[in-house]
Image (tube, rainbow, N blue to C red):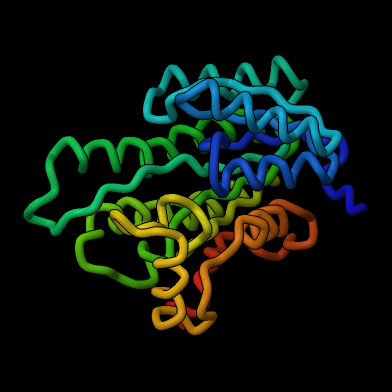
Length: 252
């Protein structure tokens, strides 16, 4: 079994479901101690159970990444509880749809607070720790709808994710001399509830993917997790400020 992250402490935000949960379990399977964060304790507890089932060690730290005090406490608790922080996957995100003129101010504010401010706050406190302790790696979740393509009714979401891509690339340049390597993934349709349209079943989505994507299918959680682990590992040591698109060819 590959043990690329043996002895490493990993923090995953948005770790209670979807890509965050799958990636947390994948890190644990490869030897990492994993702290998972999110707003709801129950899904986080289930992720920790799954980490235990693969022989890993994990803990749940409830936190809202849009709140500065929560994020500062999240990083501090991770370090205090597990003895360090070597890898961070800033994955927490929300989705709201609507044409530009129809988006409610509250939805706009929430998208930016979680998707963008949450990534900035997470990186801020992760970098402060990593810079003082010899470096680390950070992977942020952007989107193929950010810097790579557009769909009607998702302008606000796309704006928040495009900003994540820009922030990732800038921070990657700023902190590489401190031994901190920062990259992003930009998923397209992955097998999560977020990729389901309103009222759509998984079978409906599968039919839609056959005509929408060159790959003719939705991406799997394991595929997304594998991409994050590669960017976080020494195998991608020459990737700096990269935005890895995982969208079945939608932007090809």
